[in-house]
Image (cartoon, rainbow, N blue to C red; front, side, top):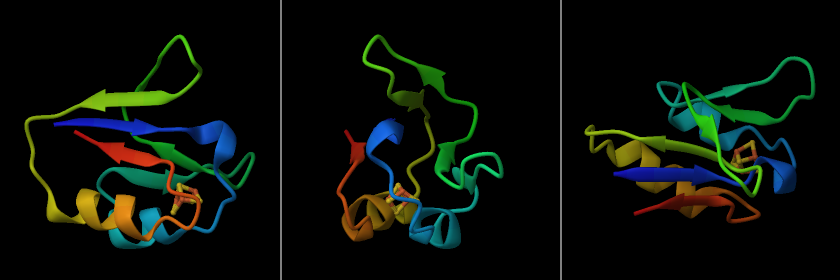
Amino acid sequence: MKIIHEKSKCIGCGTCAAICPEFFEMDEKDNLAELKNSQIDEDGNEVLETKENKECLKEASEVCPVQIIHIS
Ligand code: F3S
């Protein structure tokens, strides 16, 4: 499972961190979500590959108001 978080478009609503805290936390410095243990790709997005198939990741991608969490 590959997770991409377009942090530059995050509006800091916090839902992802609330429903999927194993993968998302709010960054105290900028109040935006951070994908834990992720790498930054060439587009500046946070990317993480995981073998875990957590239902909350799918939920987070569905409920994010700006639709910037992509799961594949
Ligand atoms: Fe940001 Fe969407 Fe999470 S706006 S805080 S990535 S739910």
